Structure formats: structure tokens, C-alpha cells
Length: 150
Image (spheres, rainbow, N blue to C red):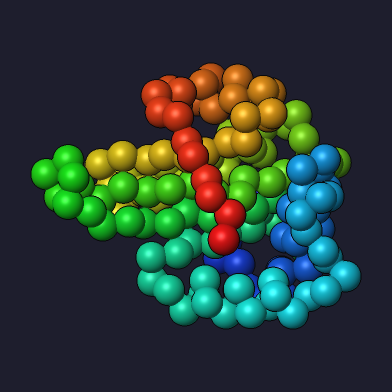
């Protein structure tokens, strides 16, 4: 394998990111890669927000992974800033080679660099392999998450 670069995502990366989001059983039911407009609009909002850090992993000029880190200032925990890791995806041809670990390590180090006291993530309850992966990287399943679709 050749060198890997983790870099800030650009608008040109959006189709590759969306393709990875759609390339699993859950994503296939909620993503519509054939309609790029909502993803392009979302990218503009993400890119304009200084608390959002959307990156891609690139190998040989090809996007092979992505993660989004959100920095959240707060009052709890004595005014601690926390980071939320979202949308971790690795291209199917790269899975099992350590890229997911590199993306999470990037996110943790970036959170630390930005002064965050906590880094957290959520994972769909059905993604048991992902849960084992996150636990192996030092994350604890310490909370129960709830969502309400709007």
C-alpha cells in the first residue's frame, strides 16, 4: 500500500463520501447518492462552521475513508469542551487494514489539540462489530443514546 494522507474534505470529495455512507445495510436505506443536492448543501454548512472538521483519508488520489469531528463547547463538567465523532467510514476495499483505527486516532488527537476534555461517539445498536472496534480503541459503552426523528 502507498502513503495515506488525512486531509480536510473539499466539495469535490462529497460524492466519494456519500458513496461510502451508502455502502452498508443501514446507509443503503437512508442515503440517496443519485441526488447530490442535499449533500452539497450540507457540505457548505459543514465547511462554514468552525466547530466542524470533516476529513477524508486519501490514497493514490482516491478517497478511501472519512470522519467528521464536531467540537462542542459546554457548561457541564466545569465548562468542558467535548468532541463528537460522527460518520466514520472506510471504503470496502480498505477495510481490515487499520484505516479505521487511523481515522479514530486522528479524531482523538485533533480533539485533544483543540482542548477537548471528552471525546464521544454513537453507534447504531445493530453495529456490534463497530462496538467491539470502538471498545478496543478505549471507548466505553457508558451511556444509552436516544434519538427522535424530526
